[in-house]
Image (cartoon, rainbow, N blue to C red; front, top):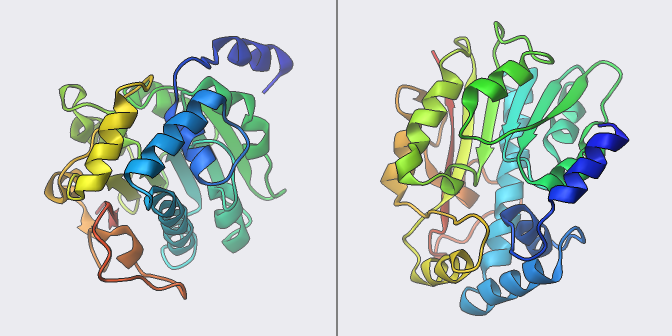
Length: 268
Protein backbone atom coordinates (compact mmCIF):
# COMPACT_ATOMS: atom_id res chain seq x y z
CA UNK A 1 0.00 0.00 0.00
CA UNK A 2 1.42 3.38 -0.95
CA UNK A 3 1.46 6.54 1.18
CA UNK A 4 -1.39 8.14 -0.77
CA UNK A 5 -3.71 5.20 -0.06
CA UNK A 6 -2.64 5.25 3.59
CA UNK A 7 -3.52 8.95 3.89
CA UNK A 8 -6.86 8.34 2.20
CA UNK A 9 -7.59 5.52 4.63
CA UNK A 10 -6.71 7.69 7.63
CA UNK A 11 -9.17 10.32 6.35
CA UNK A 12 -11.95 7.70 6.45
CA UNK A 13 -11.30 6.50 10.02
CA UNK A 14 -14.35 7.32 12.17
CA UNK A 15 -13.44 7.69 15.83
CA UNK A 16 -16.96 8.66 16.92
CA UNK A 17 -18.44 5.16 16.76
CA UNK A 18 -16.97 1.78 17.68
CA UNK A 19 -15.92 -0.48 14.80
CA UNK A 20 -15.85 -4.23 15.18
CA UNK A 21 -12.22 -4.70 14.04
CA UNK A 22 -11.01 -2.14 16.60
CA UNK A 23 -13.19 -3.48 19.43
CA UNK A 24 -11.93 -6.99 18.63
CA UNK A 25 -8.36 -5.65 18.69
CA UNK A 26 -9.00 -4.15 22.15
CA UNK A 27 -10.47 -7.41 23.46
CA UNK A 28 -7.39 -9.27 22.20
CA UNK A 29 -5.10 -6.84 24.03
CA UNK A 30 -4.09 -4.81 20.96
CA UNK A 31 -3.33 -1.09 20.75
CA UNK A 32 -4.96 -0.17 17.43
CA UNK A 33 -8.20 1.17 18.88
CA UNK A 34 -9.74 4.37 20.21
CA UNK A 35 -11.53 5.49 23.36
CA UNK A 36 -14.93 4.77 21.80
CA UNK A 37 -13.80 1.20 21.03
CA UNK A 38 -12.46 0.67 24.55
CA UNK A 39 -15.74 1.95 25.99
CA UNK A 40 -17.72 -0.45 23.81
CA UNK A 41 -15.40 -3.32 24.72
CA UNK A 42 -15.67 -2.56 28.42
CA UNK A 43 -19.46 -2.42 28.15
CA UNK A 44 -19.48 -5.83 26.49
CA UNK A 45 -17.23 -7.23 29.20
CA UNK A 46 -19.43 -5.88 31.98
CA UNK A 47 -22.45 -7.65 30.48
CA UNK A 48 -20.57 -10.74 29.30
CA UNK A 49 -17.16 -11.04 31.03
CA UNK A 50 -16.21 -14.11 28.96
CA UNK A 51 -16.25 -12.18 25.69
CA UNK A 52 -12.48 -11.67 25.63
CA UNK A 53 -12.14 -15.45 25.86
CA UNK A 54 -14.52 -15.79 22.89
CA UNK A 55 -12.18 -13.54 20.89
CA UNK A 56 -9.18 -15.66 21.83
CA UNK A 57 -11.00 -18.89 20.97
CA UNK A 58 -11.76 -17.44 17.55
CA UNK A 59 -8.07 -16.80 16.88
CA UNK A 60 -7.21 -20.29 18.07
CA UNK A 61 -9.72 -21.75 15.63
CA UNK A 62 -8.20 -19.69 12.82
CA UNK A 63 -4.77 -21.11 13.60
CA UNK A 64 -6.05 -24.70 13.76
CA UNK A 65 -8.14 -24.37 10.59
CA UNK A 66 -5.40 -22.76 8.50
CA UNK A 67 -2.86 -25.29 9.80
CA UNK A 68 -5.21 -28.08 8.67
CA UNK A 69 -5.80 -26.46 5.28
CA UNK A 70 -2.13 -25.79 4.54
CA UNK A 71 -1.05 -29.15 5.94
CA UNK A 72 -3.42 -32.10 5.69
CA UNK A 73 -5.61 -30.56 2.95
CA UNK A 74 -2.68 -29.28 0.87
CA UNK A 75 -4.18 -25.83 0.22
CA UNK A 76 -1.71 -23.22 -1.02
CA UNK A 77 -4.08 -20.29 -1.64
CA UNK A 78 -6.15 -18.44 0.95
CA UNK A 79 -8.82 -15.77 0.68
CA UNK A 80 -9.32 -14.27 4.15
CA UNK A 81 -12.46 -12.11 4.30
CA UNK A 82 -13.03 -9.96 7.38
CA UNK A 83 -9.34 -9.84 8.17
CA UNK A 84 -9.40 -7.48 11.12
CA UNK A 85 -6.38 -5.70 12.50
CA UNK A 86 -3.01 -7.49 12.43
CA UNK A 87 -2.33 -9.57 15.52
CA UNK A 88 -0.54 -12.80 16.38
CA UNK A 89 -1.00 -15.82 14.09
CA UNK A 90 -2.28 -13.96 11.05
CA UNK A 91 -3.36 -16.24 8.21
CA UNK A 92 -0.22 -15.75 6.13
CA UNK A 93 2.02 -16.45 9.12
CA UNK A 94 0.23 -19.70 9.93
CA UNK A 95 -0.07 -20.89 6.34
CA UNK A 96 3.48 -20.02 5.35
CA UNK A 97 4.90 -21.63 8.48
CA UNK A 98 3.43 -24.88 7.14
CA UNK A 99 3.87 -24.25 3.41
CA UNK A 100 6.19 -21.32 2.56
CA UNK A 101 4.80 -21.07 -0.98
CA UNK A 102 1.28 -20.21 0.26
CA UNK A 103 -0.40 -17.18 -1.31
CA UNK A 104 -2.84 -15.12 0.79
CA UNK A 105 -5.27 -12.34 -0.07
CA UNK A 106 -6.80 -10.38 2.81
CA UNK A 107 -10.11 -8.51 2.51
CA UNK A 108 -11.59 -5.90 4.86
CA UNK A 109 -13.42 -2.58 4.56
CA UNK A 110 -12.41 -0.92 7.84
CA UNK A 111 -10.11 1.99 6.88
CA UNK A 112 -7.93 1.45 9.97
CA UNK A 113 -7.27 -2.13 8.84
CA UNK A 114 -6.17 -0.68 5.49
CA UNK A 115 -3.83 1.73 7.29
CA UNK A 116 -2.16 -1.21 9.03
CA UNK A 117 -2.21 -3.48 5.98
CA UNK A 118 1.56 -3.23 5.56
CA UNK A 119 1.88 -5.62 8.51
CA UNK A 120 -0.21 -8.13 6.56
CA UNK A 121 1.75 -7.76 3.34
CA UNK A 122 4.91 -9.47 4.48
CA UNK A 123 5.58 -12.83 2.91
CA UNK A 124 8.09 -15.58 2.44
CA UNK A 125 10.08 -15.28 -0.80
CA UNK A 126 8.25 -18.34 -2.16
CA UNK A 127 4.74 -17.05 -1.36
CA UNK A 128 2.76 -13.83 -1.73
CA UNK A 129 0.29 -11.65 0.16
CA UNK A 130 -2.13 -8.95 -0.97
CA UNK A 131 -4.88 -6.81 0.55
CA UNK A 132 -8.22 -5.75 -0.94
CA UNK A 133 -10.23 -2.85 0.48
CA UNK A 134 -13.73 -4.22 -0.14
CA UNK A 135 -17.04 -5.07 1.50
CA UNK A 136 -18.11 -8.70 1.88
CA UNK A 137 -21.39 -7.70 0.22
CA UNK A 138 -19.51 -7.27 -3.07
CA UNK A 139 -18.26 -10.80 -3.87
CA UNK A 140 -17.55 -10.05 -7.52
CA UNK A 141 -15.20 -7.19 -6.65
CA UNK A 142 -13.45 -9.42 -4.10
CA UNK A 143 -12.99 -12.26 -6.56
CA UNK A 144 -11.77 -9.93 -9.31
CA UNK A 145 -9.20 -8.45 -6.94
CA UNK A 146 -8.15 -11.84 -5.56
CA UNK A 147 -7.50 -13.14 -9.07
CA UNK A 148 -4.53 -10.77 -9.34
CA UNK A 149 -2.69 -12.85 -6.71
CA UNK A 150 -4.49 -16.19 -6.62
CA UNK A 151 -5.07 -18.67 -9.42
CA UNK A 152 -8.81 -19.25 -9.11
CA UNK A 153 -8.62 -22.35 -11.27
CA UNK A 154 -6.78 -24.04 -8.38
CA UNK A 155 -8.24 -24.82 -4.91
CA UNK A 156 -8.63 -21.92 -2.46
CA UNK A 157 -9.18 -21.86 1.29
CA UNK A 158 -11.91 -19.27 1.92
CA UNK A 159 -11.87 -18.11 5.56
CA UNK A 160 -14.72 -16.07 7.07
CA UNK A 161 -14.44 -15.58 10.81
CA UNK A 162 -17.14 -13.45 12.48
CA UNK A 163 -17.91 -11.85 9.13
CA UNK A 164 -21.26 -13.43 8.18
CA UNK A 165 -22.57 -11.92 11.40
CA UNK A 166 -21.78 -8.48 9.98
CA UNK A 167 -24.33 -9.14 7.24
CA UNK A 168 -28.05 -8.73 7.93
CA UNK A 169 -30.59 -11.30 6.80
CA UNK A 170 -31.86 -8.71 4.31
CA UNK A 171 -28.43 -8.75 2.63
CA UNK A 172 -28.53 -12.58 2.40
CA UNK A 173 -25.29 -13.84 3.99
CA UNK A 174 -25.86 -17.37 2.70
CA UNK A 175 -26.24 -16.07 -0.84
CA UNK A 176 -23.04 -14.03 -0.49
CA UNK A 177 -21.12 -17.12 0.65
CA UNK A 178 -22.48 -19.12 -2.29
CA UNK A 179 -21.45 -16.35 -4.72
CA UNK A 180 -17.94 -16.40 -3.27
CA UNK A 181 -17.70 -20.18 -3.52
CA UNK A 182 -19.33 -20.57 -6.95
CA UNK A 183 -16.26 -19.77 -9.10
CA UNK A 184 -13.83 -21.64 -6.85
CA UNK A 185 -12.88 -25.09 -8.16
CA UNK A 186 -13.53 -28.45 -6.51
CA UNK A 187 -10.99 -29.07 -3.78
CA UNK A 188 -11.57 -25.61 -2.29
CA UNK A 189 -12.62 -25.23 1.35
CA UNK A 190 -14.74 -22.89 3.46
CA UNK A 191 -13.65 -22.21 7.06
CA UNK A 192 -16.29 -20.18 8.87
CA UNK A 193 -17.25 -19.28 12.42
CA UNK A 194 -19.84 -16.93 13.86
CA UNK A 195 -21.52 -15.96 17.10
CA UNK A 196 -24.71 -17.70 18.21
CA UNK A 197 -27.83 -16.38 19.92
CA UNK A 198 -27.90 -19.26 22.44
CA UNK A 199 -26.15 -17.45 25.31
CA UNK A 200 -28.39 -14.80 26.94
CA UNK A 201 -25.41 -12.87 28.32
CA UNK A 202 -23.83 -12.67 24.85
CA UNK A 203 -27.15 -11.58 23.32
CA UNK A 204 -27.38 -8.76 25.86
CA UNK A 205 -23.77 -7.74 25.26
CA UNK A 206 -24.21 -7.62 21.48
CA UNK A 207 -27.44 -5.64 21.83
CA UNK A 208 -25.53 -3.10 23.91
CA UNK A 209 -22.76 -2.98 21.31
CA UNK A 210 -25.19 -2.62 18.41
CA UNK A 211 -26.87 0.37 20.03
CA UNK A 212 -23.76 2.48 19.42
CA UNK A 213 -21.78 0.63 16.74
CA UNK A 214 -21.14 1.84 13.20
CA UNK A 215 -22.23 -1.58 11.92
CA UNK A 216 -24.39 -4.00 13.96
CA UNK A 217 -23.52 -7.64 14.52
CA UNK A 218 -26.19 -10.28 13.93
CA UNK A 219 -26.15 -13.34 16.17
CA UNK A 220 -27.87 -16.41 14.72
CA UNK A 221 -28.90 -19.83 15.92
CA UNK A 222 -26.41 -22.67 15.28
CA UNK A 223 -28.65 -24.25 12.65
CA UNK A 224 -28.68 -21.06 10.59
CA UNK A 225 -24.87 -20.86 10.72
CA UNK A 226 -24.59 -24.55 9.79
CA UNK A 227 -26.75 -23.82 6.72
CA UNK A 228 -23.94 -21.61 5.36
CA UNK A 229 -22.08 -24.88 4.59
CA UNK A 230 -24.93 -26.24 2.47
CA UNK A 231 -23.69 -28.19 -0.55
CA UNK A 232 -20.24 -28.72 0.97
CA UNK A 233 -18.72 -31.80 2.63
CA UNK A 234 -17.97 -31.05 6.31
CA UNK A 235 -14.57 -31.98 7.70
CA UNK A 236 -14.80 -33.89 10.96
CA UNK A 237 -16.06 -33.03 13.56
CA UNK A 238 -18.51 -30.93 11.52
CA UNK A 239 -20.10 -27.66 12.66
CA UNK A 240 -19.45 -27.48 16.39
CA UNK A 241 -18.79 -24.96 19.18
CA UNK A 242 -15.56 -23.16 18.32
CA UNK A 243 -13.30 -24.72 20.98
CA UNK A 244 -14.46 -28.23 19.99
CA UNK A 245 -13.15 -28.11 16.42
CA UNK A 246 -10.01 -30.28 16.57
CA UNK A 247 -8.94 -28.78 19.92
CA UNK A 248 -5.26 -28.34 20.64
CA UNK A 249 -3.44 -28.94 23.91
CA UNK A 250 -5.52 -26.21 25.54
CA UNK A 251 -8.57 -28.47 25.32
CA UNK A 252 -12.06 -27.14 26.06
CA UNK A 253 -14.55 -27.05 28.91
CA UNK A 254 -17.75 -28.94 27.94
CA UNK A 255 -19.66 -27.00 30.60
CA UNK A 256 -19.12 -23.69 28.76
CA UNK A 257 -22.18 -22.18 27.14
CA UNK A 258 -22.03 -22.10 23.33
CA UNK A 259 -21.15 -18.60 22.15
CA UNK A 260 -19.93 -19.37 18.63
CA UNK A 261 -19.88 -22.30 16.23
CA UNK A 262 -17.48 -23.07 13.43
CA UNK A 263 -16.63 -25.57 10.76
CA UNK A 264 -14.47 -26.39 7.77
CA UNK A 265 -15.99 -27.95 4.67
CA UNK A 266 -14.82 -29.16 1.26
CA UNK A 267 -16.26 -28.23 -2.12
CA UNK A 268 -16.52 -31.37 -4.25
